[in-house]
Image 1 (cartoon, rainbow, N blue to C red):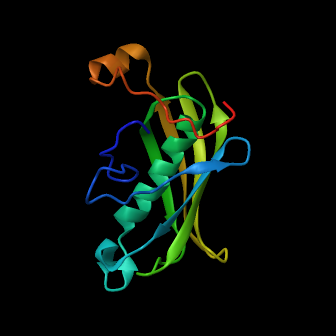
Image 2: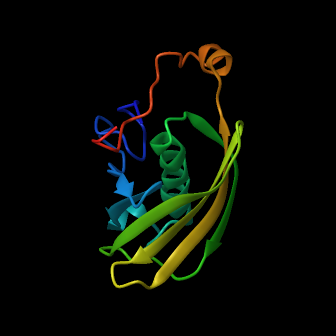
Length: 149
């Protein structure tokens, strides 16, 4: 999303997850993630914090896809089935409510054959120029996921 050292999506973070989002439908986003042994909490099972990070980043990319920079105001997560080490999962998110100051998104993780793993409802606060400036982020711009835009 404009920061190459981001833990979840940054290509230049050597210890990051390197998630690559693509546009999904009109306003959604999607990515695939392969859970490795070092992402574990319990033996053979992905740590819940990694799962939350995937859902949070997907919600942020929904806003990004709309041309907005946001921070997470609230993330409600429901864990449905474990994600196992070595398993590739799909992350999908889409907006469900948009206001001038808030984007609400639904995000979900499923196995590649559709088994639900986790889902979240996120509230993403839109940052204005003054807020971006106060955080030292005034040069940050959303990544264009739509090549036609």
